[in-house]
Length: 181
Image (cartoon, rainbow, N blue to C red; front, top):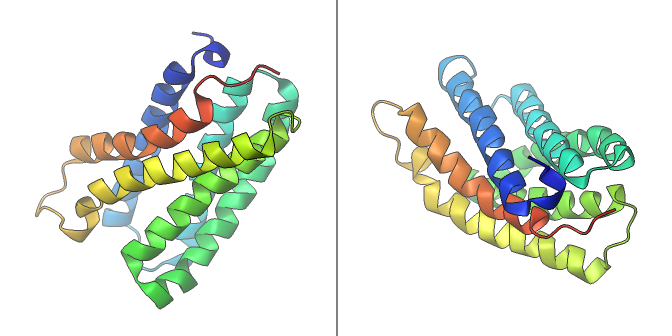
C-alpha cells in the first residue's frame, strides 16, 4: 500500500501500531512500573512520538521529511511527557493527560509541516492540529474509563481497541489528503 496516497489507510496503520505500542505500555505500567515513575513516563513519551515520526515520515514519502521527523518528534515526546508530571500535580491525572494529549497533536502537526518543507499554509497546519487535538481528545476522553474505572481484570484486547479509537481521529486529521511533496 502506498501510504502517501492513502490518508485513511495510513491513519488506520498508524493508529493500529500506536495502539499496540500503547497497550504494551499499559501492560508494562500494570506489572512493572510504579505509578508516578517519571523516567519510564518520559521514555514512554519518546516511544509514542517515535512511532508518530515513523508513520508520518512514511506517509510524507520523502527522505527529507523522514530525516527531519525521526529526531524531532521523539525529542518533542520527551518534553511533553516531562511536563505531564508538573501539570498532573496542578490539575490532576486525567486533566494532565488531556492537556498533554492536545499538546501532542498540535506539536505533531507543526513538526509535520516543518518536515515537509513548510509548503502547507500555516492556517491549514493549525486547522489540522486543532482537528487532531479535538477529535482525538474527545475520543481519548471517551475511553478514559480504562484508567479511571478499571475492570478488576484488564482486557488488553479491549485496551488495544480503545487506544486505536483514541488515536484514529488524530492520524486522520494529519494524514487525510496530504499534500504531495
